[in-house]
Image (cartoon, rainbow, N blue to C red; front, side, top):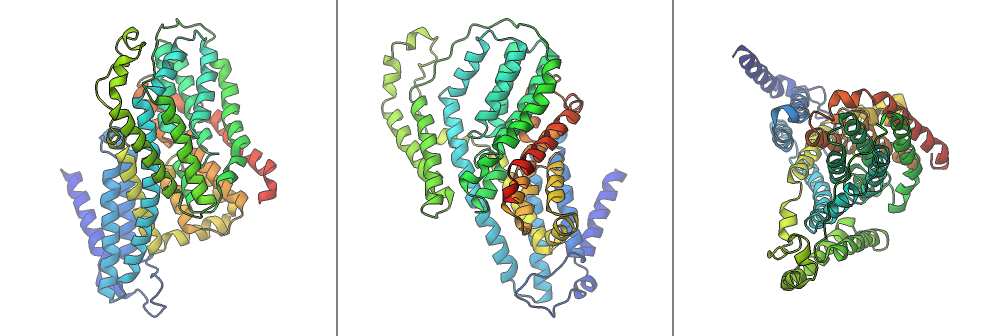
Length: 480
């Protein structure tokens, strides 16, 4: 009880500090009122910073509290912008300044959210059509040994994650690992670590592979094809720790399971439509100079029309000759409904992304990001700052870290922007909690893939992290 009373008093103290008239009066209003005030040394700034830190502490404790990560940051965003608006109101300053700033943040969020929603819908549709289930069954029945499966699941994670998100890819590959070697904890631990590293590395060289690369692409800093120069650094990031861990993988042969899964009707055409959708988004951005999200939403229309066709021809599923020979796997009488994959999108992640964009945007409006940019990119230097960003993303989610860098918008060469894209993408592999893939696999392989099990191999992963940075600085030196 005393602890909660202390927290309540501390919160009240922050409120009083934030809105103390004496502190607010200390804010200079003699400058250009068309520019946001620097509130970093005022009660409002300290209050906003404390709210964000508290919210993010709750996000990092999600595994223990089971409080979904979107909830604290959404509330924090409202509190931060409310405090900013109230400060401007008390000072008699133009309310249009915070209003325009939050509208700009909402526009950035809307573009990314709708883009991700279309991608998630396609992934969920392919999952509903049993595309990933068929791949999993094929690997389970392959008869490969533990070491072969270690490399196969790693390479598949590396090459699937640039198209699908790293979370879906990691869960799929981990399902294979658990089905084949679930009774061998050592194999599961090493294979899970390898999958996390591979999925994060694979997403780093593709505009679609990770939210961080997507943000940089949509911002127009790097064009679509520019990201692929990170392919070799990403390969190095994956291969270095994998090659070392290979010798620790049990050299044994698991019992192959006899399992066959047949994809549902339209699965291959939906995969083709996804590729056409990606091509549409790239073409709209590169040739028509439209936001990529317009091309992705057009691609959602492709899927909707094809979904209508599947719905109208659902009776054909019962007429297929393989329907009776696969234990009814193809015989679902329920017609395809496009809004079911939409509903199964990762809404917690999408809403978390809103909270992050709004919170970081608020801190930037207060002046904290300009302060951080001066310290990191002026005093430390761009290379050191970008390497530090990757290390930070192992502790804090890479979404707010990357959005903060984009909001700072430091004056950097293309090579440095690619470096921070690489480090933010692969830095999360250093710890199991550093990426969505790692957190998800700790739940999926509970007791076999753990935080400390991953931590034992962090020095090896760090070696790959350093090697990938060195590779980028070496082969892409012309971009710096």
